[in-house]
Amino acid sequence: MRHITILGSTGSIGVNTLDVVRAHPDRFKVFALTASKQVELLAEQCAEFSPALAVIGDAQGAARLTALLLEKNIRTQVLYGPEGLVAAVTDSACDTVMAAIVGAAGLVPTLAAAKAGKRVLLANKEALVMSGNLFMQAMKSGGGELLPIDSEHNAIFQCLPPQFTKSPKPALGVEELWLTASGGPFRDTPLEQLTAITPAQACAHPNWVMGRKISVDSATMMNKGLEVIEAFWLFGLPLEKIKVFIHPQSVVHSMVRYVDGSVIAQLGQPDMRTPIAYGLAWPDRIEAGVAPLNLAKLADLSFSEPDLGRFPCLALAFSAAKTGGIAPTVLNAANEIAVAAFLDEGMSYLDIPKVVEKTLNAIQSGPVDSLEVILDIDAQARRVARDHISAI
Ligand code: NAD
Ligand code: MG
Image 1 (tube, rainbow, N blue to C red):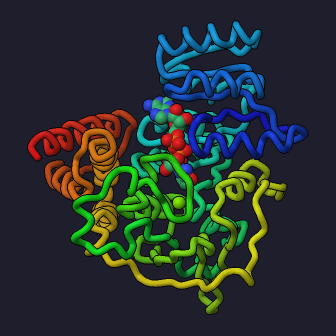
Image 2: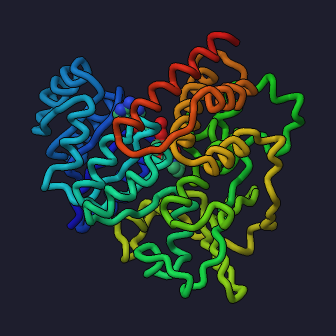
């Protein structure tokens, strides 16, 4: 029996995780559920899954959640804020953590889960992009298992030899990792029309249903840039061996090219319950509620190289990955601020890459050697990005 904490249980990944958990009460028990603001949904989830612990964003939310749980006669303990999140992942009664908070807010609890030796199911790619080596070292010293949930990385994990992630040796013959990308809703939109893109258009992904931030990242392809950095840390291959291909059908979730000419791919429906179920049950495979893939019904599968002129965010991410050090932390923070300004403040879609680029240029690169440095750089990059947005 796995005892699971879901960081971000009310989000898209969180809800899909609970869907898989619900179908396997013999395998999984929820230890803790957490959310930032959605008190009602969190209370409903507590009523269904009876976790020992629920964590909400702040004291006010905690008071409302406590009252709701009392009404429903549920004995879940309520905590709040970042300390509550850390308590939910470090408790000895929890062995598995689904890291599904969006953005930098997930870093501290995800890192705490890594240090505490839990099985970490990593959806929150921003946490790894920000902290890189520090996160991988924390996993190593904690002695737990890191399983990627991002569909591309989960696919690559499935296509690699099992011993690869423990010690990537040349003898295993892995030559390249090929990340696929749908290209998002604006893959073919005439460039001059991009000035008028609205948040609703950017969030309408052709193949996947996801949270708003990652939907915008998919439209700009910053998501794929973050995923290249994520793959670099997860699998330890040099950056030049990590390639991106546009694959509009989202059927091939990613591939591994081997030295002998073999290319191994993982295929499936664009449904996150597949990688979630794989991570939860690994090394077993369990029913995930996902419709079988019908190959005969697929019209075609196409692949092409991304146009970096159309997707400047992807080019910025490649460049930050190459620079290394704090550059990915800056890239991530500036992108979070720019995407929020686009979604909530009416900033133009085309200003997203401009804000990211200006922020990257404004902050001197340096090494990432502690959590304090990362949090400090993250805060600095957010201030610089906000200043650029105010000046637009
Ligand atoms: P979402 O916006 O739907 O959900 C985010 C969750 O995080 C919610 O439960 C929210 O309450 C919580 N949260 C937000 N801000 C918080 C804060 N400051 N403190 C504590 N909790 C906070 O996002 P999502 O689409 O589920 O994505 C979650 C993560 O998974 C992201 O990092 C995303 O990149 C990654 N991911 C998502 C998908 C997908 O299909 N949705 C696929 C691959 C990777
Ligand atoms: Mg992905």
